[in-house]
Image 1 (cartoon, rainbow, N blue to C red):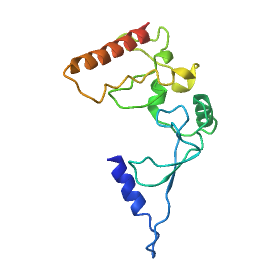
Image 2: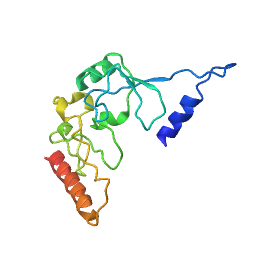
Image 3: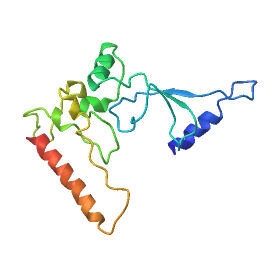
Image 4: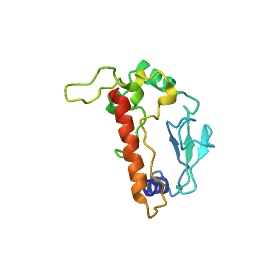
Length: 163
């Protein structure tokens, strides 16, 4: 688990020839519009389920455009999926390329849509348009309805991207 790895890192933060651990801080890329950013400031303590550390959020007030301007201005590396039209990365089960980046008439002979790179997104409110809704954590007897809804949502996204 991710939190177990953090716990190991935090508890083993002891300099050589010492038995005193020092506080830990992580510089993150969290922005105010991120789903997990609620209530965070430039400096924010870790969540209750994590080991104690300080979050440092230097780009908290940046927009999607600020991030891409910075990355491209300084020729910084980034994940190649962004060049394939992904604008927000989740898991393979809940992320598709952003429909707003579909290249008009860009379908190849095998009908696979083409997408502009993420930095070409004009409407920054569409940043998470390629993220599918996750099913509810509480399983009910009618699990097929949430699965069916996800399939419908994915199909709708595909239709949008093909038009």
